[in-house]
Figure 1 (spheres, rainbow, N blue to C red):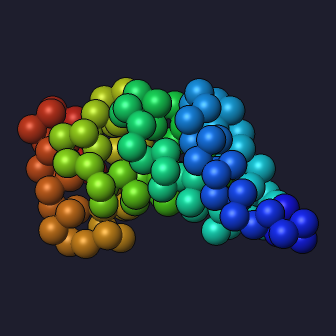
Figure 2 (cartoon, rainbow, N blue to C red):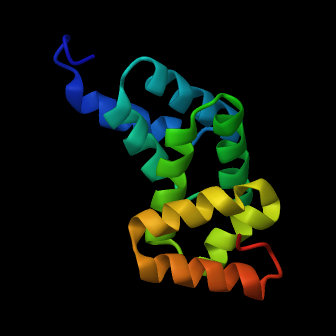
Figure 3 (tube, rainbow, N blue to C red):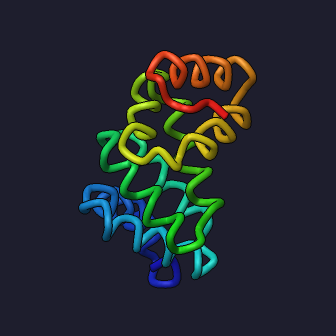
Length: 129
């Protein structure tokens, strides 16, 4: 699209993809990453961070299944930056295997965010280790 002078339309297209159901969104993110379009993938995942926790759990699970661990970290990092700890923990309630990646993403954001997420996990009786 950039070669056709449609670069501005890329942002619109990514916004539209971010509204797709979880599985197609995860597939699009996987394809963007595989095509070397890391910036577009990052933009898509940041837009997806506003979705309901159950959707985020499905997206993260699909990305994990595709071996896209960096993209999972990007998605969870965006989540912990923009959502309250309890909402981030709701993703782990939907997919308990995301506890460690969520904590790692929180640690990458800041120590205080990591502390807040770990405390929210404990309050929810979910593993924080």
